[in-house]
Length: 89
Length: 188
Ligand SMILES: [Zn+2]
Image 1 (spheres, chains in turn yellow, red):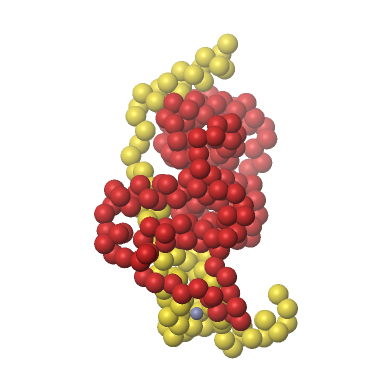
Image 2 (cartoon, each protein chain N blue to C red):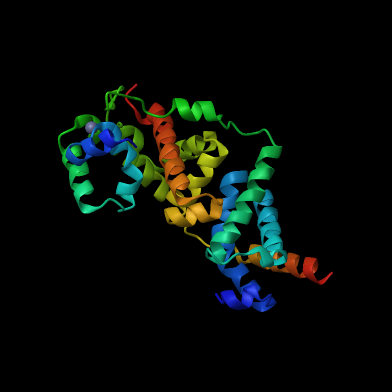
């Protein structure tokens, strides 16, 4: 990142900057002053609001797709038998 | 889970790990190979390989994360042997990224239609089809980080890439998926 980009980002963020920081934002890794600038941009930018809404929904749909159930006990037993056979032969 | 005992080669402790880790490992593998029998056999192979190569466990990640890394590698090679998937190439992944001019989006984004996203089973089907289209490396990070909810750094360890590379890949994968879902959930 060059000096001018760094300097500009201290005062204002573009949509492209905001986009680049999305992973860090959702991981809670932005420091306080960056997060403030990030949120200030979004508050006044409809493009970012619309894009981030889709980005967040994508994440939410993936999260809810997680399978909570345990695999059947038989599957675990078959695996243990497989390992014993392989390792004891 | 007694990591020390497992690393030392204790069979009982290892079997304990098999019981504890089977579910997550199986689900990760199944999402890649998409066939239950194949997923079971790859999971078994993963545990076997882990036991035999315990010497190469460096201890800079959790054992369970290392195990997932082995499972992903085996699942990926199995998937590549068959051609029944509609995986897209890297150029397609590039095309699905947003573009910018003078720091602003070149495209206009509209909220997704609630009537199209509302039905959960239908939504699942659409999500699965979209995940299937992602390139292998994008699919894998999405499975680990966004579905299984590993932290970004754990996902990086499992995939044996740097945390910075994992963040970039995750972002691009989410954006590709967003674009694919927009085809279904968008207005037209
Ligand atoms: Zn913006």
